[in-house]
Length: 211
Image (cartoon, rainbow, N blue to C red; front, side):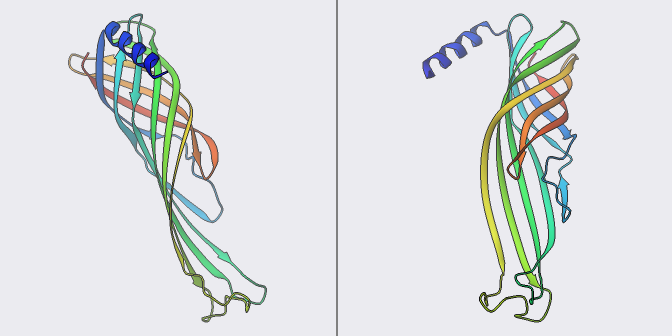
C-alpha cells in the first residue's frame, strides 16, 4: 500500500503543472459546541492556517490544508448530594482547540482570471480539550456533604485528545491577479463536540502564490 501511494504521488508530481501555496482565513458560520441551558459558549471568530495545492491537467488539483478553530465553554450549575444538604455550585471551563486536516480533490470549471471550483474529499480532525471544574458549597462548611460522603469536593483539571476522520467539501471561485490568487469559498466538514457529530460550515478566503 505504501509503495502504491508513493508511485501515485510520483506520477502526480511528474504530471503537475503548478504548485501553489498560501494561507486561508475564515470564520465558522455555525457553533458546533454542545448546547446546555447552564452554559455560555464562546467560539473563536476566526479559523485558518496554511495550505498547498498541486495543480494537475484537465483543471484538476489536490489541496491539503491545516486549519485551526477554537471554542471555550463556561458552565455553572448546582449539584445537591442529598435532600438534607445544601447544594454545591459547579463552575467549569472547557477550552477546546481543533485542527482540521482536509485533503480535497478540486475541479475548476473554467480557465482564465475567474475560475469557479468545487472540491470533495475527507478531513482528519484532532481535538484537544482542557477541562477545569471548581466546586463551592452554597452554605456553611460541611453542609453540602451527606454523612456517608464527608469529604468536600474540590475540583480539578482534565486534559483529553480525540482524532476522527470524516468527509469534507468546498465550493468557491478563484480571482487571479498578477501576483496573488484570491479564493473566497465555503467549507464543510463533519465536526464533533462533546461526543456528538455535527456539520461544521466555514466561510474562508484563501491567498495563494506560485502560479
